[in-house]
Amino acid sequence: MSSYPVLDQKDTRSGFGAGLHELGKTNPNVVALCADLTGSLKMEAFQKDFPERFIQVGIAEANMMGIAAGLTIGGKIPFTGTFANFSTGRVYDQIRQSIAYAGKNVKICASHAGLTLGEDGATHQILEDIGLMRMLPGMTVVVPCDHNQTKQATLAIAAHEGPVYLRFGRPKWPVFIPADMPFEIGKAQVLIQGTDVSIIACGHLVWRALEAAEELAKQGVSAEVINMHTIKPLDTKAVLSSVAKTKCVVTCEEHNRFGGLGDAIAQVLTTHAPAPQEFVAVNDSFGESGTPDQLLSKYGLDAPHIVAASLKAINRK
Amino acid sequence: MVPGYFWPASKKASPPMSQTTSAPASTTTTTADLIRIASQVRRDIVRQVHGVQSGHPGGSLGCADFLTALYFKILRHTPEPWEMDGKGQDLFFLSNGHISPVFYSVLARSGYFPVKELATFRRINSRLQGHPTTHEGLPGVRMASGSLGQGLSVAIGAALAKKMNGDDRLVYTLHGDGELQEGQIWEAAMFAAGKKVDNLISTVDYNGRQIDGDVDDVLPLGDLKGKWAAFGWDVLETNGNDMDALLKTMDEAKSRTGKGKPVMVLMHTEMGQGVDFMMNSHAWHGIAPNDQQLKDALAQLEETLGDY
Image (spheres, rainbow over the protein chains, first blue to last red):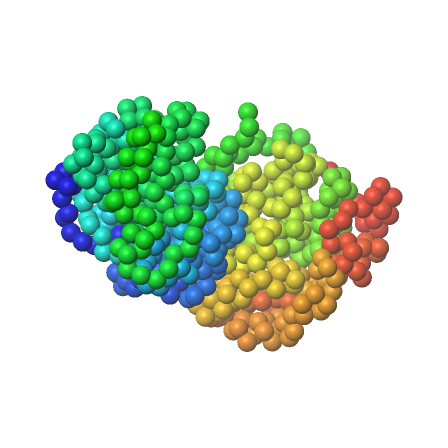
């Protein structure tokens, strides 16, 4: 993709680690907590340089969420770090009562989300976390698309007042967002302008959407690609202005088709501007062991599936 | 308009301050003073629960002496101006949120909000929700509680923040004994001892009863003192319904802070303490007295500060 050359291959979790380390230097109120996954979350640099603000909680995620909530009462900005599965499903009630309902300024940072966790398999590949978090009143949900954007998002959520769920992942992935591209929570990015179909994606699948748009262009189809890095609050305006042009939508996410980005967009469309929508998402199943690419392909989350979904959406207009 | 959620939570306007609230007591408050205040707190508890025919009187009555001692003698706190951060103040977290009637009574009586607001307990548009919450902006409440087992972790976080901030004040918690069946409590217990959170004094309302019956029948806690000690806590025991014993033990607990261990006080209490027909049973855990029962209860509790 000429407009978005691959700058590097890096994991999004390293973007989080880099952002957290920078916050350590710039914001004395930022405190980091981890549940025995410091290496996996790339929190070592923060731990090494700011040991007095790093709390190793051990394998006790419920306790970690409660401690984070309590830290806010002393004016701290706690960042919790563990896998997405243990950041959400395992501790849903702790987040619900002690963080969301209590309105505490906790940043829940979740790595290894989705199928691209890979070989560890379905026990760890949570595909329901976006849904769980966006159902909580007052929760902001951010799913950045590459290393650079994950770093930007990490910095942005520290400055945002209120509870946030930040979702990122494990695999090395194309870096294509320029480090100086502005990032604003709740403001979608139109990466490619088009007129035939709106492809709205989040996380790792934004790159797959760009690949699909290139293939569609070869077939004479003009696809608009939108990076919806914030699932909540959703940039409704961006969705509606794109659909006003294209009249159909494909949503792409590394998540169950229930509860995630696709549902959020469908709600916007049915409320304001009904239009055909196709869902590129996991079809209500658990994952399995495999490489990230094998899994994305098997579960229908690769560029060929996005191309097929786009053509189907266009045909339904 | 249907209510939506705003962050931070929008605060409902507080009712006009038409009734003077009692100021928090000074260090000269005597045991006799505290016993008199606790009697009024018990009246507030049964009247709140009766008023809305809903709520949890049993545990509230059992903890009335402790919370009175805490808010009128032990805590170094400033009800006004109310600040969430509580820097330079002792903090208290109620983990067993269902005993909200006693919490609301001591908060109101010590000056956090107008005493007359107790009449709104559990009613629509009230800041006094069934279980305490920060969501409606009620002064004195720093955490939502109700879903059990979460308060110790929160208190640890607040205690760690105090250490980071160079704030030498203490953090207190209260837990139900049945609540200790929750696993998160023991995650937190392990952490607090392992990480030397020694500016923390936790207490347990050890009344031996929970909703379904005696704790020993539902799920025995075993050697509770031994368990906390084995986790690395400095453990004290006291009679939670004897004001002199309570004050002495809490003084002792305070003297043991700052020595590398969190401190636990197991308070032996009687559910329903102060109202004879609510005692010696788990039956009054979560039911409201009828009109006659209210009358019978109030006849046993002297009105010392004036009913709301």
